[in-house]
Length: 140
Image 1: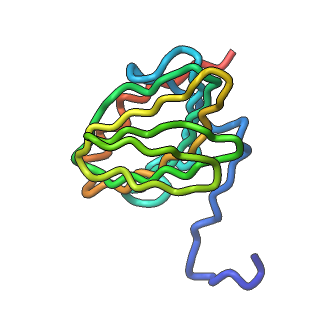
Image 2 (image 1 turned 60 degrees about the horizontal axis):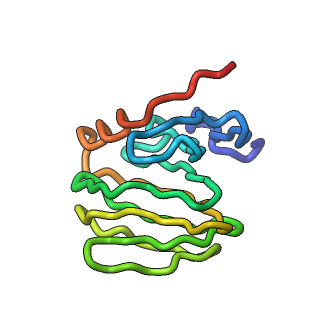
Image 3 (image 1 turned 180 degrees about the vertical axis):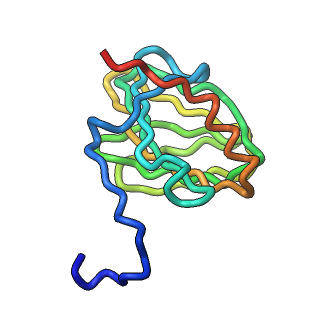
């Protein structure tokens, strides 16, 4: 930090994973644990989070024409991602582009695990309204 440019008053963003806000969404089951890892207020028009669940489980089909999205498979991720008419295996340590505006969903089979990071790149500020579908889980 001593060599960090003095004119840059922004401090690095960091958070413990367990402190990242958990949320639910209508397209995900109650067994799914989702977290916002990088809120959209840190870097303009970018947000990141995780999705985790044991199989069997499913993320319902949805689409968003206001953002580009990448998925990064995390440890033990073993799911099938569907986008429009295509289906592809999505294993751990792989990256997958979700085409702009495609109808996409995720399936995890019995005995497998869903664990991936989503990265949203919004086309404009208005597109960030999509994040209002994330319903914060109240901390106990």
